[in-house]
Image (cartoon, rainbow, N blue to C red; front, side):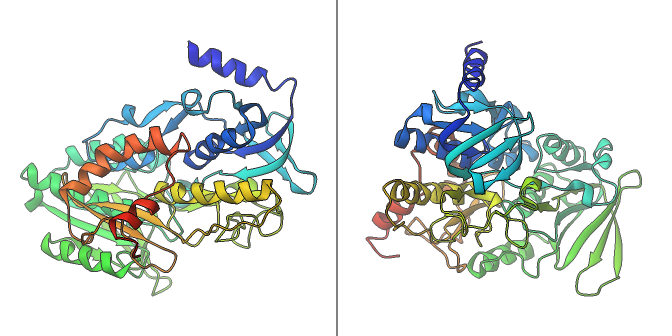
Length: 426
């Protein structure tokens, strides 16, 4: 009840005010983190956040939900509970940008003007770009850890597996958390071994990429796991159709245009194609590929000095992860502070991102790297080795850090700790 009263206050506050010093678009990890940080800079009454969703999800845990070791309920909290107190919540979608006039239009017909705009709209999933989806999810034996609607279907497909091919896919587009499509493969392998079904399973990972993972140090370690566990990896294979009624998946060979191959499956995990927010399309904020066009060092828009971006919606050339958002939030905080004082941004984002590659129900390879694909590891150990401690961090520590650190604007990534752990050396 308190949350809904809070929400009423958020919304009713709009009637008298349609201008904010800082307007944040998007209530995901980047938007909430920046709203919290901006509240401390300019005061809660001068900050508004536009977000239509009633529930905020900690999406990284969905890998473990799909493998049956966490509940989907544990991943969500009411949006009202994570919006910084006193900050206005506009429960609408962004419909149009007008950066020339420092204005945003919402789908409810409201015009909101701003002094500074932070765009944190995330990305969009495009299951519909695969023939036979999303309607194919109505059938059993198919799931996807990328949506709250389909993540439990992954677990249902896995626990009901009997015999045959277990298929895992990676699309021919940029995606968020590029390790997740193979994490569920390793977890499925572990589950099938634990339940005595592994000898009846042929595990296949079909990826559009020409590599198993984008950073060689971690890719080499993953290839070792693939060989040791008898997993089948096919590079440059892109899912183009699912015939869920027949339990068939059709892949195109990206190196041989026009050549397709049909795989029968007993289970399939689909990673959908993804793309930039549709509302950016045709606006003067997008780059040629449709992503928010920002400076890769400062996160300031390349055309509009009072517009900034964070997270998956941007064209920053790094992996789209919550860890990247954390590091970006610290840089963007500093950038906006300098701009508010009419000073030049002086803090640089190095592209830091992290992917805890879950390799079983108790091990993780913690991949951390920068724009150049160079390892940027926090701990003074070889993080390309499977670790039980890192699994505990992924499953238990990181969710706490997310809800109570990142979303409160208090966690800006492990940079300072890395410096201490490595005694000042990179």
